[in-house]
Length: 208
Image (cartoon, rainbow, N blue to C red; front, side, top):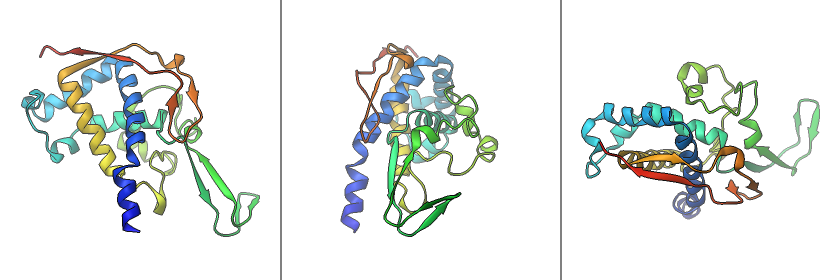
């Protein structure tokens, strides 16, 4: 019902958003060229917005198209929900394999996002994978960090706005520097993507 949807929208996004930010800061710290391009884009939208007291509008966030691509690439590499389960509600065929009604199907989003046919050199961090001309070449279900179809995440637009607003606020005041390296991370099995040990970055105040 509506109450359950509101609970999902308001509360169940907490852990997934925290997971997303962990890996966004990791990747932005590892790629200073990307980080600088993000700051340049913020300045392009409106130079006064680097004032920590200035208020961004929804229109401003919607103009941050490079940031949109960066966040999407972070979510591709490190989807906050690495797998989802779905109940099969009728007898189905998947290729030549019969799947009976009431079976449970698990979709491994982590692996789906690393399909080299859809994402060449899949471990490479490349926000330009999400340029419109590149997106058009892919299967629409190759990238599903918020699931897809009628059961997709009700809060995905809110989540993207939240990610943009916090990333913008941080980059206006701080430079993010790497500490933990990607190849050092050991993941633990959980419903939300988590590392065994804390993932660390360093924040250095900007002098703009």
